[in-house]
Length: 376
Ligand SMILES: NC(=O)c1ccc[n+]([C@@H]2O[C@H](COP(=O)([O-])OP(=O)(O)OC[C@H]3O[C@@H](n4cnc5c(N)ncnc54)[C@H](O)[C@@H]3O)[C@@H](O)[C@H]2O)c1
Image (cartoon, rainbow, N blue to C red; front, side):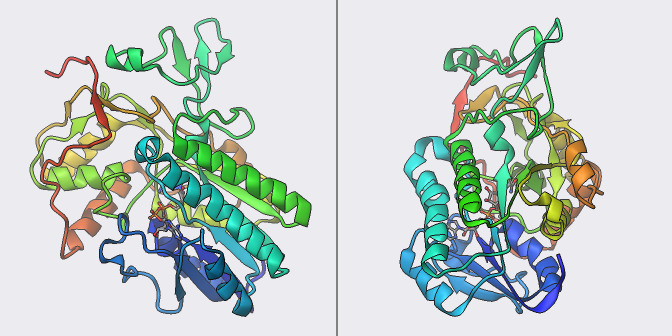
């Protein structure tokens, strides 16, 4: 993508964790960057714009579900490129607040598309940040080597502390090989966003690039949102000297990718014509257990060792990590940061914040108790 000063990039959800980190990169590529955000209280206590958002970014406060917001914006601003980040992102929360997640993520996306049509705007690219949540439990492999889709874990198994699919091994997630099969309402809404954009883009000849992000963490992540950001939550626990409680048996695998690597990945997908029409997985290229991540954080803070709580959370999948090889073939990008680098950066950033909300041992309302031995 050529960078010119008379181009406009609209970032929905531009005040969020990823939008704020992406802003400097966008300002290098576009003459005008507009952030549209409703400043959701759960993410932005006091509904303040983040101080880290560069002053050069134009701030527009508004809800993506509101037609009038779109009409007022598009009457004066015709974006060349849209980065669509605005979303309700609570995986567990989405199970008991389904309408809220569906209305923002699905209806909000549809309102954006209708407004583009009403105003005769055909952006030269729309990029959506989708999620690993679209895969659900993904694909596993039986002992005889045959792959299968295990579907969602049953409540009976979770209550009995049967966390894995016995006799099989999980496989990495990749858009080309693992079809969507979400296990949370949030995941369903991300599939719907993808399909809405693809269908609409084909009808109006607007290139759509989709990046499915794994677990993004790092400086700038909300320290107050109880529903997202396991790494910042673990840091808050460990810095107070608490032993981090691990759900299930602590051995769930995750692909923790540092925000800096995600920002460069999104920028590479914006720059690449080959990314248009594709769905690309963005992750660290490695997996860690939740226990590994908690141990790294506990070590940073010299906190007591993490412990298995035996709780589980509806909507969580057992293992999730990306095979990023297909993405590396398409994008001029590769992740640079290890988990240790990332934890040090996140924890150092948290320590530099004046006002870190106390963890205080608040219970997780999404958690349920399974039957795992809690003495470990
Ligand atoms: N952070 C991750 O680990 C991760 C992983 C996979 C996908 N994603 C996706 O990336 C995108 C950005 O995530 P994030 O981590 O920056 O989350 P975030 O919660 O920090 O940012 C989302 C932003 O959207 C805004 N928003 C929410 N509802 C809105 C509405 N109705 N109208 C306008 N703005 C609204 C919020 O105020 C917030 O600033 C989301 O689409 C999310 O699904 C994130």
